[in-house]
Length: 462
Ligand SMILES: *[C@@H]1O[C@H](CO)[C@@H](O)[C@H](O)[C@H]1NC(C)=O
Ligand SMILES: *[C@@H]1O[C@H](CO)[C@@H](O)[C@H](O)[C@H]1NC(C)=O
Image 1: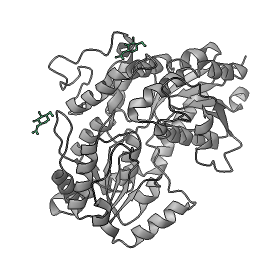
Image 2 (image 1 turned 30 degrees about the horizontal axis):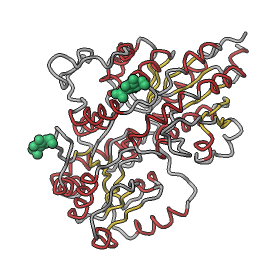
Image 3 (image 1 turned 120 degrees about the horizontal axis):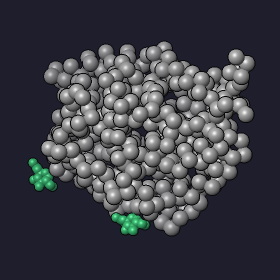
Image 4 (image 1 turned 180 degrees about the vertical axis):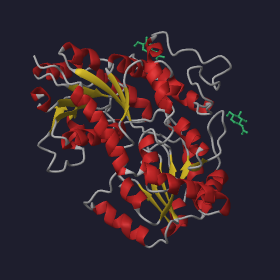
């Protein structure tokens, strides 16, 4: 059919956080590799900070710069969550919502076949549909977290979130037809509720944003595959009443270029024996309290294990006195951007102390690094419960009420996962699973299937 040879135009619009922009950019590259045209939309300063596109793809990916309106409370020049404390991100959402007229004008000027959008984007589907474009909601998380959250329509109740299931907050939701212990735990609920309650410069809750973004879209895509916990797919199809399409895990590739940071880091890693270093990174969104930071630092010190700690620390908290002197060459505290994929791929790394965000989790497992888990927000806690059930790592013991943890437990968990005989199971299981997570052919197949869906359900030509 002649009309189906027409190449697609796809607009891709992630939330203003690099943890979202990077997987959306990878998705854009996969679409462009098929010869389709992509308009990747963000704000000026974010576009300027993206990694360079490969020369073969840059003619097909148009980087569209919107101007972020300023709102009271938003620090100067802040355009992404990394420019803010976690408790300030609601100002960014308020500014983000003011992008609606610019975005609508852009869509109107040349309506695309598809708009692929993120969770904060409740106003995007109506704008896109008005000009005949279809919408795909793309969740950068896995299947169990949105399944746990329940039917998206229930999130649209302005009175607030649906009541917890009868039997208490930890009872299994009735829409999950198989036994599971995956849940949000009290300390995580508290931390998120505290943020949600005090932080609403935009007046729109995250739950409402997510619900409306899903309900308004034509397709629900997510970073997921049937080969790992595939049973959640049917739950999501039931809950969402629309096509749910896994795009695969999108495993990371080790970049070919060699930035100057990497030279320094590699030199240090090269001196360590195989699988002896723990790589520590809790992402740029988690703001540790002073106590959390101190216990983690003391735990690393007590463990005796060499460590590379990527730490973007707010000025309000500090490392224990004399920490870096006592550690000497055994550990590095790295406050700049860290080339995480390169580090995890290095043979000296033998464990990954992580917050269990889904991108980091995929990267850790794809390179066969057992996980030492310290989750804080959103899907991290449920991910940790599921991963510990699969013996891909172990969680640092926590106080279930307030989430606090102790230095000795940090040290003990690191040693157990990385080197003790009792922890061999984690090292073996993660090695087995790296074959699935790193299977490029498998995950490319999912991505191709998703792009095939976009091609088959393109906008009708007038
Ligand atoms: C949230 O925003 C609304 C509207 O701006 C305001 O009336 C309300 O007090 C806010 N709620 C909280 C908990 O700050
Ligand atoms: C856990 O935290 C709560 C609240 O801070 C505290 O009351 C309780 O004693 C703690 N439990 C333990 C075992 O430390």
